[in-house]
Image 1 (cartoon, protein in one colour):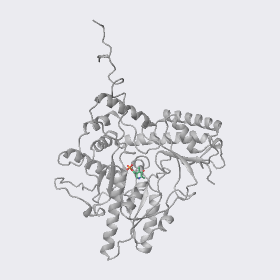
Image 2 (cartoon, helix red, strand yellow; image 1 turned 60 degrees about the horizontal axis):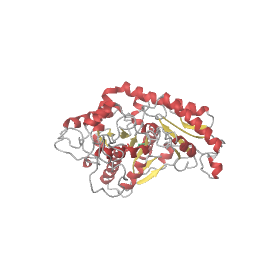
Image 3 (cartoon, protein in one colour; image 1 turned 90 degrees about the vertical axis):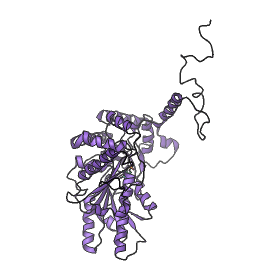
Image 4 (cartoon, helix red, strand yellow; image 1 turned 180 degrees about the vertical axis):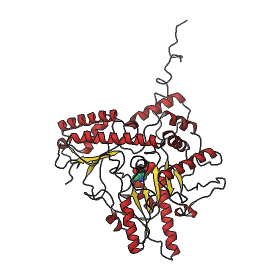
Length: 464
Ligand SMILES: *Cc1c(COP(=O)(O)O)cnc(C)c1O
């Protein structure tokens, strides 16, 4: 008897590699006809994901990339729960309702009013709902006066793409105050120049996508108060506080940007950005239910409570909302403040480190009075190291860091910037390693002069 038989399956064979599945290509277009070994396919799919890079080194995204074990546990527990099934899962609906209350209070919704709000899959849905309510309020007010509703417009500064989507999907003219090379946001005068009787509202971005800085919400509201006094136009404000909505309340509580300003009628934010929830959570709140036109609300009679069903999606995972409630309760105000403060500290540490290198000018360097935990910089005027910020971003990628370089929007396209968003889990130790990689990348690029060698103009540092 042979000790072992060649070509016969043995319990000592590697269960994954060397199998027929692992020796074939994964399907690209057509579903395979036959079943395949689950554990092998699971391994192969996981292996493909190596090419994705490491989320924790993604310094481009505003979204959370750190997930604690407790949240994993809650997500796992709720993986088969549909948030919309409020009769099946009444307690999940209750946690959502509590979250809305917590968020409304965090944003100083008037104690005397009757604020309403809802969750969304992210800020995009939350903004869309805020925009739809604004459009409907304007239409209703115009119709009541017998005026035309044919030409609605929305006034905003540089915004996240969701507002371009809103305007295109709902056929609203977008009146966007462009950036200028010496002004990266919409201020009072530039806003007023766009407003007329067809303006459905103003969107103020509290944590600008391009720089991380806060729009001057109070200044905008004061300018609109003045406008109403002079011309009788009552223009209302939605604050898109996707990231700032969970930073300023903890780290700059005296800054006026929220419902303490009467003109602010609705606010939206991403739970999954500085709200610290896992991906798939957004919030929108109206200061009073009178600002959410009733015809937009679908009252589901089994719901019974005061949470209106006003959402775009129907089915949605419940885990994010449950985790958000856990985080609000587990961390509390002080916990959020500690986490966000640590992020600001890292952002400042990084900007000081980069500043010392002598090549960069900062548009924003992580001051909690001015914006979210982030930093944005460009090459100093006159500095020509022979490579662009795009080259630097590429070089950092070789160590796994995602530090995006991009040109600012109109009319500041000539300025190319690089930006880091500091999130929970990116502390001073990691930041110091990143600074070392910056120094190494710059040294290597200086040596190789990619721009000059290629004769290409990457336009990365020419901003005069
Ligand atoms: C991220 C962001 C959005 C979109 O939010 P999602 O949660 O990604 O859908 C909208 N507005 C601003 C200002 C943002 O930063």
